[in-house]
Length: 415
Image 1 (cartoon, rainbow, N blue to C red):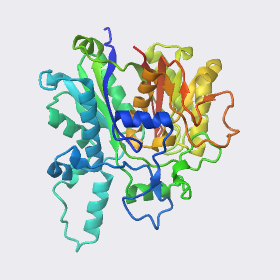
Image 2: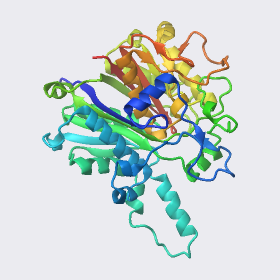
Image 3: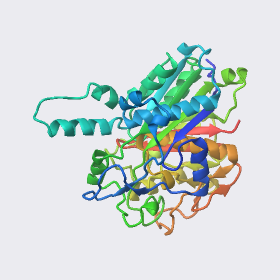
Image 4: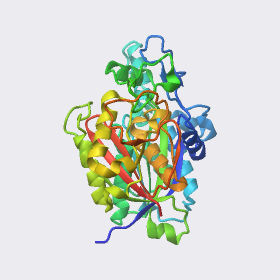
């Protein structure tokens, strides 16, 4: 069976450094930090008092007030980014065969704010379970693609993948495979997360995962830097419209890039820590090269998972050197989490968008906040630090990993 080719025809972004695709990409190019003191709640008793929140955003500018009240923020973000991607794609959503259009989404946690608030209200009450009737449909992780599907009447596959921080990359690869096999013409995919909450911050602080650089939040996310001390929590959404290449070409769609393959693997090592030698990461990148039908020397750029954790950054770069060998110093390597923070289940989506834009504009966004060389990182690797790099980018990889050892890698190609 000959597999269909899969291309990207639309993108949408709602991030801590930009509330649409253009704002997001412009901020990435300029090295803008999205980190600031938390405004959503009082952080007096929290170890970490900052995060990468969405800014200057009023959901009622995009979604009817009554409808928005019935949605957790992670679902609101999904609909807003999804709307932008669909509009960007130029799809005629009235005339297409809606049975062949799906929505496959990623969320690592889902409606954590809804869950937190409802349980707190119950605990502070008199023991009578007076829960909001929308509690469950606001909270469940699969509700984000449901809202997009209902809004547009898309009747193809509709579900959410949950693989921690790899969730949206997982969703994208599922979408790619549905189209490759001829089951769908179009799939809206991506991910969203809204975990900047008391429960989210408190939980990640309890496991010592977050940076506590409260004196300088804007520099706290510093992947590859010797003084990094944990990741910075972010929120938002990224959406991509994937199409069968022939279908997109027939309707005259603009095409950003082709998704030529991807891979999955598991560390099978620890519930939160990465394998120190990057064995699972080595496997997922090798799987991706094979699935995409490319050689190591074909890769120009890798947007790393690069969370700014002491263990994770070193393990991932070791894996890159192991897979790419003598070609590794020719690959431009960055981590856009230095600007956006870590969007958990939405990370793979917004970082895929960054990789695709790097291909489109032949420009690699920088890894900001780098001041101190880490002697545990191979000095031959070409890290893009503090300033963007102009270079020809024909093939880019995006790495996304999650607690539990879930690894995804996606390969994009200029078309």
